Image 1: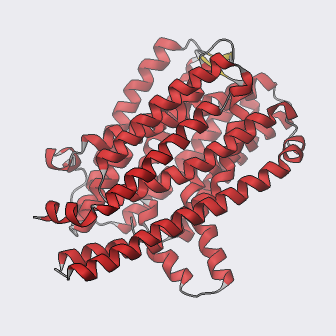
Image 2 (image 1 turned 60 degrees about the horizontal axis):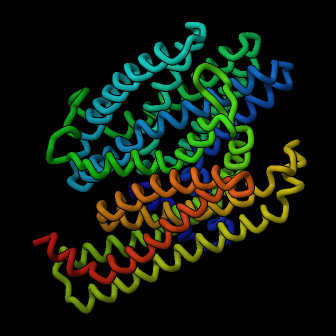
Image 3 (image 1 turned 120 degrees about the vertical axis):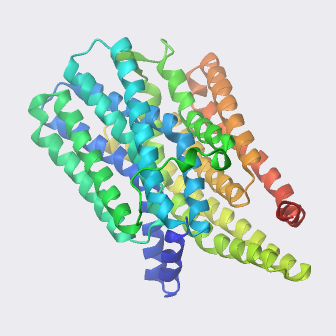
Length: 456
């Protein structure tokens, strides 16, 4: 999705410190914005509600409901996000712009119906909460599933000022609505969440409607067998499941969790440190987006243009060497920036937790989660490079390995006791990154051979 890449390159071409800072701030907000902002705004809603003297249990029920909504909607649509991104990218490459919008409407229709049916079934079978609560949870679930699919268009659109403005409007609306609707208790907070995410969804859809023209309203070309990549569906599912599996294991182990509302449980011990640690990935994500979407993407385009236009092998070899160097420098820069962020947070963690009113008992787990999410940024960067190189099989293997390792090592950490909590998540990512680096090295060595074999 080159839209954001062009814009970042334009800012960086001014070649000044302020322009560089400008590019990184935008990249950080766009790459990690939607879910980091949602974590912050949901936390704000929680703090606000406690300030309004709402019972703590109600606020906790709301926060856990939101966490489960995020987890299930991401796992359910993860495969479709990747699959549909690939479909859109291919249509852009073929310059068939009029096919994009009808298929987006088609995929949103499919998601709305399937998420609606699945949500209805789960809420009616597993929950015995009041009807209004279940209806609000269902509406939020369907909205989030659609929102994740619409957000994939954002990095392809160039109007990033507007993207950030809409984000700000949506989440401000959420916090303001929570304040005004707090008299309705948990239902008021869920309605505020729906207003926030609903406004985001419709404002972004309006932007996409302006950007892409179409002659038909709905199309289902993305379901055509020629466009279906089952490996992408499975990859998206496994990646998101890999991120959440350790949380689910802690939630459904009676020794580390407690019942909150309906069948939903939470682990007070495990949840807080990991969500705080996730806020620390903004700097790493910013570098990741700038480096991958500017330096690497440029060399990648040049390399494949040279191959398509029949340049000499020597010339192709030179460009490949530059592209490989851009990957190395990009990964090194991500490690430096994310490493520095982690070190600073390590130093200030005791004061930070005290300021947030969180017990210092959480510190060891916060430290190990901080290392884990920092490695996750590198993992995401490596997966992105593999996607550029169209190594779908490698990405799928890495994501399946992530799920299995995170699940197995988290269960082992539960068996070993509290001082090992968090190590399952971090070690699984470390192993995946080491394997990915080895695979990337091999893939780059054989790049010309595989490219020529595929193109003939």
